[in-house]
Length: 284
Image (tube, rainbow, N blue to C red; front, top):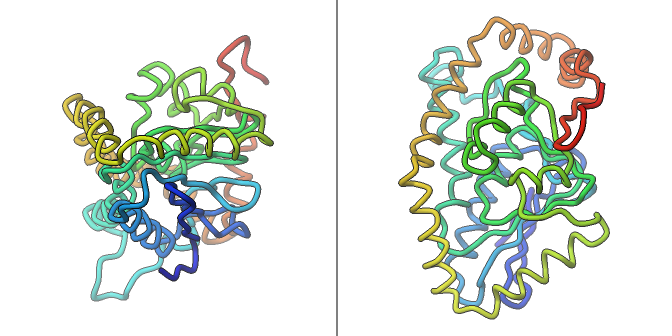
């Protein structure tokens, strides 16, 4: 299969899927999400593949959504984002592409280095296991003035208090702290990330893929019984509501007038380091 914004290869029993926009820190465009969904479905159908490793090219895993596409549309005859139902409709289109990570039968391991923020956290939250570099940064800064996560597994992964701590401030945690609170399976030194992920993938390669599928689906169906699937549907609705907040409208106006980088800098200036710590006092 030919792709432009991801790469796909099968190595032994593992499909390696790489977000491949390093010049934009692998920000998620509509095209990238469409290609990602196609690659995941290819891996799910390919008998030789037992599991997928999802990673990002370059120093970062994913910088969230590509906001340069926010106002893009097909013209006046098609849905835009002005009306709240149009916004929900568009959010659901992207969510369906990402939910393939949760719905596909074969397990997906995310290998996370550098920055993983915004919708990038939604991607890893829908994976089956996440291994992070100790110095990675994981968080959802857009809750400060844009909206809410359109995919939301935070409650199920790290519990209500840490979900609130991070989503009420937009602060981030390090990879090491992410592993402590359940956002990741484990954290390792950055130079050991690839080898650690591939060791786990190779172990999955020893197990019949039909059994891997049965056990993944058992756990995920349990999550569905706990409301996880319904929460994803609600998340798109709530994010669209958040987009109507006065500060969210002001952020979009700043972004249009001065660019994305300026809007981010203005938003984050008052938050200092922007990190929350699991152990000990938070930094200033």
